[in-house]
Length: 335
Image (cartoon, rainbow, N blue to C red; front, side, top):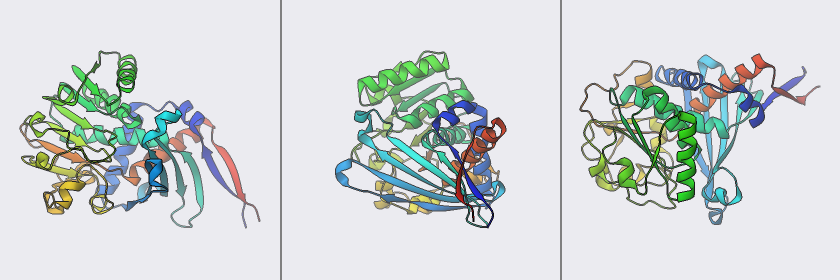
């Protein structure tokens, strides 16, 4: 049997790549286009709660992207109290496989991939579904994905005003300072949800609630705005979905799976059905359906995380690391 090796990339190697905003957006867009063209397989995520006392769970995401020639599985831990231990709330590994033979090809630290691909999905959603010239961004939450939401959104739109808020003052203040430094512009740190979100053109909710709690008031959403709620625990009252012109989902299979997510209570209550959704984001990415069609459309985009985005960004990272000669090889069979 031929010698077989797995390429490995840890965080230090990924940091050396210094992926640009456009590289991240382009990679994730490629995965979305493939999904819209029916050239992917996306298995709904699975959850593992090892012990409820640990205040967290594992997500297992699985998929295949035919144009890239990779199947992949990502395991990501989502543990709310990790900040008390000096750890990110989300830590992950992405495994890439040959879809023809099942051979393992690469193991990649995926905490950063999770953050970047989530931010890219938010930003690309706004590119196709957001207002034409948004001026104000309101963002709730300060976890790793939040940074990339704001960074990539501002890369596309160069907002006049960015507002951020999170539950803990030390978290939101540090978040605002980092964004201000990295973006080279003032970032407003607000004291409450309403002053962060009310009247914003683009509204993102990426909070870390311990249980579903209706805190995002529907009256704050102005006509023509773009809203992305993706907290694990819903922050939306049941009447929140009233009056939206379009509901867009990342993948309807994700809607059918699990018991978590921003719109789960609305689905359980029959307020939203699969027929309520206008499109999957991949259909818009590949041009099969139009995105925003008028300035006064108020649009809600719910994404739960697509394995194809992990695979597409992982493939980009692997290609760039190979070009730079910084992958490590792990021998796993030599017979």
